[in-house]
Image 1 (cartoon, rainbow, N blue to C red):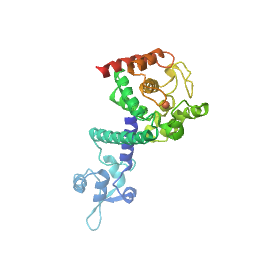
Image 2: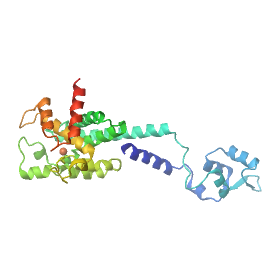
Image 3: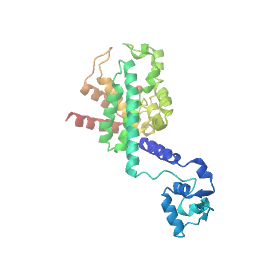
Image 4: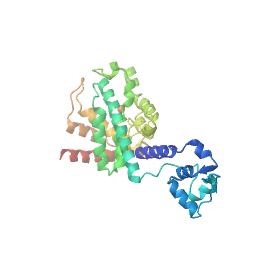
Length: 287
Ligand SMILES: [Fe+2]
């Protein structure tokens, strides 16, 4: 989808970019040069067509050719469809990749800015993105699907940007009121991501990364397969990173204890298939 939306934008921008002057497009009678511009060929090609009798033309008293626009339509010209010369599929793919890389770099810069505020969660999004990609590979995700998952994982906590420093950096257990505010971050993140054209399709995943497999999560109490697969993956990776991180109010549990905790909650908090894939991916990371 990320590739698709960017690809569509490239195609759309290509369709709208015309080097043809608007007055040429609206003319009914054209010079050889203008006809050549519309057909994207050289003036000599137009003349050759005229001399060969393939393209009807009138002659001015000065001996110049004039061509009716309607006669160009036999050669595929339409003011609706005229575009720049077709870029090759390879060129389009290169452009898409460049745009995607630029988008990823922008998101990463944005996440770094978020990390600078969120001392406790610093680096969380990037670590979760990395873990998610390992799970995705274990599940047989394509490169395209891995890009989608990675982007959603990088952005999953972006809604925390709206939470005050006092709460984000609080070295202790949150009050009910503070916890209520923190629980708004999936919805706020959804709104932020939904406002960006190329990322809008990721918004449901952002919204649902704190749903639980048993339906006791938030904000929508979705359950099982009703939760987007990528949101279920982020839930596992995010919880693992949280458990193994050292926080001001408790030490790190360590990787093994964190994995045990995740496995203990398979089928309740987490999708058991994803937990299984996660365990496999961790083995791959260790070997
Ligand atoms: Fe979160």
